[in-house]
Length: 438
Image 1 (cartoon, one colour):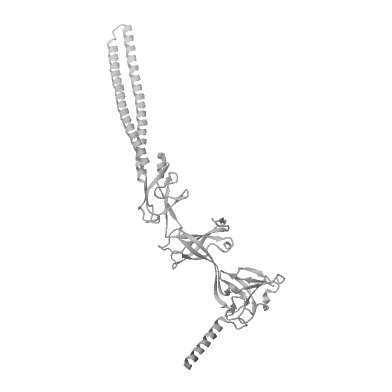
Image 2 (cartoon, helix red, strand yellow):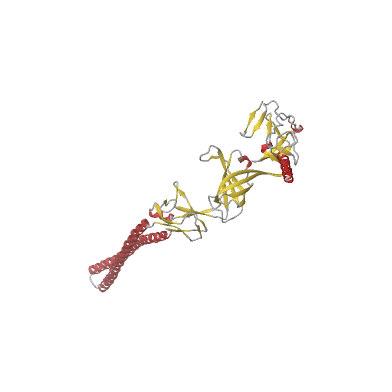
């Protein structure tokens, strides 16, 4: 029994000693003071934002834009595949109601039949009229020959008779020439009528053929492989039952999913640190285990105000280096833009930094020294220490009880660069701002 009590007592002492050395300090602080080691290594400055995926390239899918030549102002989508459907080139996307164009096609077919009948009637009239003219010319030739024969036989007749017969021959010859000229003009007239009606016939036939071709376009098919994404028209998505204008007949888009990009917005404070060409680490909210890399390809020069926000932001486009079937348009991404990278530097957590006289930055060392430091770059959690600390030093993440009245050990390198006349301030980490202290 005494042995067991002895073991319990020894174990308790060991636990107390471990707690003391892991949480305590060598100075006159309590065991609840938390310390951190000064780390030497690679330091990364990241700007973290959320973004939305979209395809770098996409193809618009059009309805029958040629239908507007037939005075059709809008269409109604009859059937359409679900948004997000992956299609191959030539696959069905949507069908459009053909009722209005069918009605116009029937009207044009009636016009075509009437024009055909008119063309055939003119052909018959032309043949009849020209035949009559040819018969008349033939009769005139017979009359001329007859008058020539009479004149020849009247050479022994009195001069008056010979003269009369000569006049009759000349008259017959003149009438024959007039018949020939009339036939020529009549032929030109009839040819012009045939050309005019033939043109109307071809026009009517062309319109009917074009309407038939346009009707085929009322079944919209994919121009390439991709995923069907609905377009927004007048504030709502185009889907089954929607109407689209023949002047803007876009029914959907097909993004190229092999090359994706993330569209994000950076606040005006951080945008100066973002440049084209910077590397980005990308994650997907839908698949937390998936990680990708990217590159900043565009940084907007002009800021904008996002809805429900007072802050000005700048659009940044990040191209994703990898291709994956999981990547889909409109997915939310987490983007960590690597703004700066430093190798082999010392850094500590931001919580370890304290401020005095508005220009003296210092830390509490575990060895009981209140040490001034020269800070470099910062990120969301840590800060680079350019002067004042050594690798392996331990710093307090909160003010130890023994350090409030201690004087700061200043760096010679910062002499003449401090504002020692400013009121003494300390960092209030719980409230996130600096406050005056007595």
